[in-house]
Length: 222
Ligand code: DX5
Ligand code: ZN
Image 1 (spheres, rainbow, N blue to C red):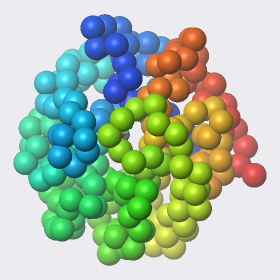
Image 2 (image 1 turned 60 degrees about the vertical axis):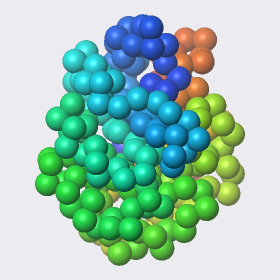
Image 3 (image 1 turned 120 degrees about the vertical axis):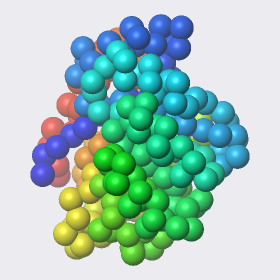
Image 4 (image 1 turned 90 degrees about the vertical axis):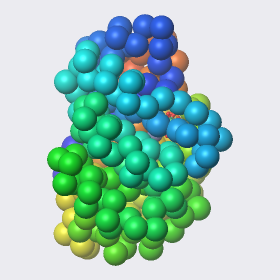
C-alpha cells in the first residue's frame, strides 16, 4: 500500500485568484482538491457552498473532496454532487443516522466519507465500516486553517488503520489539520494515505513545489 494523496485545502487560497490557485495545484501534482464547507453552527466559522464547488469544477477535473462541517449535512448532498463534488464527508458528531446518510451519498454516485473530531472515539464508526469510502481523522478541532497538529492523533490514526484493515475495508484514511513537512511523515507511518494541507501549501514560498515536498516526506514507511 504505497498510495500517498495530497489534497490541498482551498481554505487558505487567495479567492480573488481562485482559478489560478487551482491551476497551480494541478501543476504541482495535487491529487485532490479539498473543499471545506462550514456553517457557523457545527464550527465557529462560515465559508462557502455550492457556488464554489461549481467554480472549482469548471476549472479543474481533479477529484473534489468536500468536507461538510455543517449540521444537517443531508440538506446539501444533491446540490453539492450536482455542482461537481466527487466525495462528501459528513461528521459523525452531527449524524445520528450516519448509515442512512452514507448510503444516500453513494446513491448519488459520490464517495461517502465520515469525519471524526479529535475528541470523538473510533467506536462512533465501528458499525458503518462497510458503508464508507473514506475515513477522515481530524488532527485539529475543525473550523480554521493554520492550527497546530494535535500530537496524540497519531495513536488514533494507527488504531483507525488497524480497524479498517481488520474489517477488510478499502476506505481511504485521510488526515486534516496542521499537516506540514514536520507532521506528514508521522501520519503516513501511522497508516494514513491521504493528507489535507491548507496552510502548508498556500503559505509556502513556492506553493507549487510544496505539494511534491510534502509527498516526498512519505517516501518510506518505517
Ligand atoms: C479545518 C479544515 C481543514 C483546514 C486545514 O477546519 O477542515 O481542511 O483547511 O488547514 P491547515 O492545513 O492549514 O491546518
Ligand atoms: Zn477539511
